[in-house]
Length: 275
Image (tube, rainbow, N blue to C red; front, side):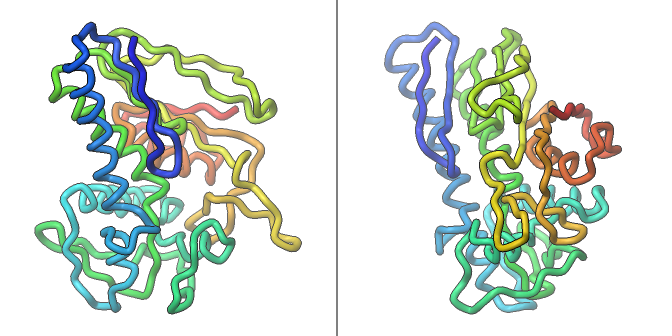
C-alpha cells in the first residue's frame, strides 16, 4: 500500500493505492489524481477571484454565465438537490457563512439571504442565468465531486484498488475493502465506528470543529437552507452512496432534517446513520 497526501479543498487529501506498480507508474497515478483535485479546487473555490464560483458571485443579476463542464455538473446537481430537499440544500448559503465570518465578505457587501431557489437558472451548454443577487458557495458538495474525479483519474491510469479521502469524504475503487474510521462526536480525538468500504463512497459531516458562538447566537459552517439558520447539533451524519458527490451533499440534508431515512437517500441509492 502506497500513500500520498496534499492540502487541497481546505483539507488534507489522502490517496492510497494498493496496486503493485513500479515507481514511475505509481508517481504518474498519484500525479493524475492530485491534478484532477487541483482542477476542481481552481474551478470551485470561493476564495479564488478567477474561479467559476467567483465569476458567478461577481456577475450582475440577469447575466448568463458560462462555466466549465465540471462546475456545470456540480451546480446542476445542487439545483436538483435543492428542489428534492424542499430547500434544505441551498448553495446560496454563502451570504450567511460570510456574515458569520466563515467566508470573506465581498467588497460590494452582502446580499440578503432568501430561502427560495439558489438564484441560478440552468440554460443550455453549461450556462447559468443569475436570477437574483446571491452569493453561492459549493463547499457542501464540491469536495465530494473532487473525490469522484480523482477516482476517475486513477481508473484512467490503470489503477484497480485505491482509496481517496478528502477530510472525511471518501471513495474506494475496487472490490478490496478499505477500513474507514468514523469519528465519535462525543470523543473528538477518537473514533467509534469502522466501516469496511468497497466500490462505494462515504461522507461524514458534523459541527464539532466549526461550531462557535457569536454574541448569543450559536452558529456553524452548515446552514439549513429553509431558514438560513445555522445547523447546530452535537451529532454527526454519515452517508454511504455510489458516488461521493451525492454522499457529501446528502449529509447536509440529513443533518438539517434529522431524518436518517430522508426520501432523497432512497432516491439516490444511499443510506445514512447518525452518531
